[in-house]
Figure 1: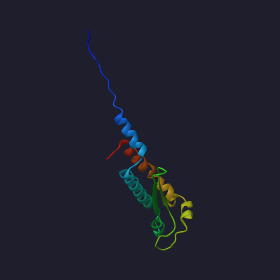
Figure 2: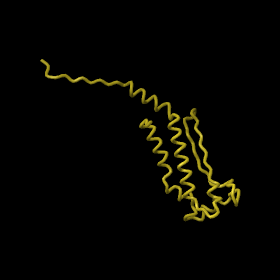
Figure 3: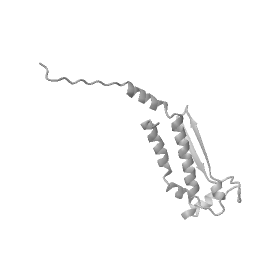
Figure 4: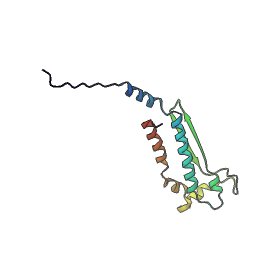
Length: 130
């Protein structure tokens, strides 16, 4: 005589699909989020850069690249070079940063926690946010 039965079923198809999605890497919506994080970081870099003539701020450039074969997204922000303004090209970025304090634009930029923007994108990918 049986007093109760318990049945357990595990469907690993969804687990396999999710692992497959993660193995494929980020899709276009995820890459768009990385690009948006880069644009937000460039805005933060601009805000963190001491402005007397605005040439240093105007010299800030960013670029990104995604290589699907290498499964790698790269982005960078660069201060110096062409500004289209006075003191063009900006050759004094390193010296300005070495002055310290509010002139150290990289230190000021890092206070905005730029890495967290990318962590947020990665977490969004792992959660499979729409």
